[in-house]
Length: 107
Image (cartoon, rainbow, N blue to C red; front, side, top):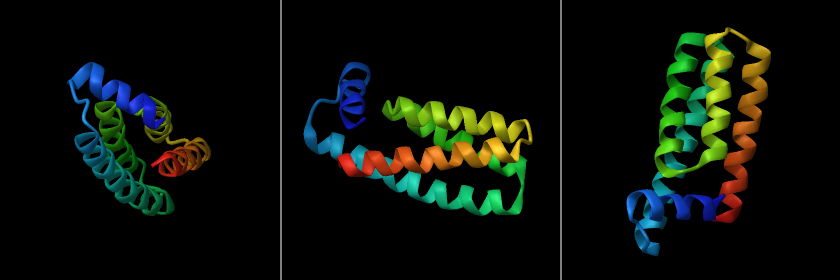
């Protein structure tokens, strides 16, 4: 996925230097870490409105950096939150955590 992000940054934002790319990736991973912790708490509380808001923010960050698999997972999680489907939300949240861990391995 790291390569997918690099390609996106170069093609869409004109960013092709390693230092800037790494800075953006580091910032994105911090945002994901904080967001996932927040989502975990919100899921435990069962607040679907707050869940949809929190996931929406991560969805946007993922789209902005070109992390398409993470963006798509957030899209599905947001839909589950809006549909008040706790089982689907938990399933998509698990997938989101896995995708984040996969990207961390690449970094």
